[in-house]
Amino acid sequence: MPCKWGGEGQGQQQQPLPRLPPDIQYWAGVIMRNACRKDDSRGGIRQCANMMCGKWETYPREFAKCRRCRKAKYCGKECQSTAWSEGHRFWC
Image (tube, rainbow, N blue to C red; front, side, top):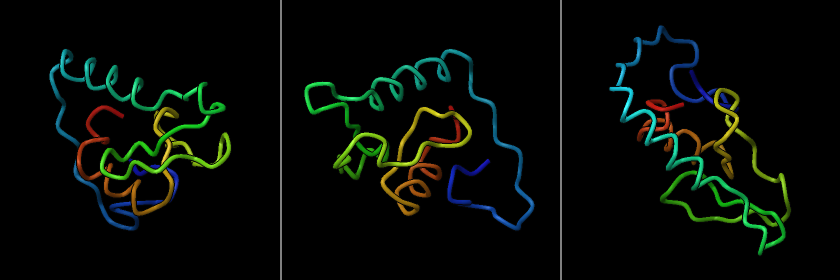
């Protein structure tokens, strides 16, 4: 299921995602929740959840949350799509 911006598979029949073992899903979720945590020392802003981006919000709640998990926040459609195809979909 794509996040906020539509992402992959929009208008196409999507294949069911493979199920990962519960242990892997759990730890992937823990890692992502920690990565998406707001930084109170920076005024409550967050970093883009695309690990290759590194961009920080310029003000709190600037980035859009994934509509499915409501944890990951992305600076834009390109980062959301990249993160989704590189693994976010497996724990989201």
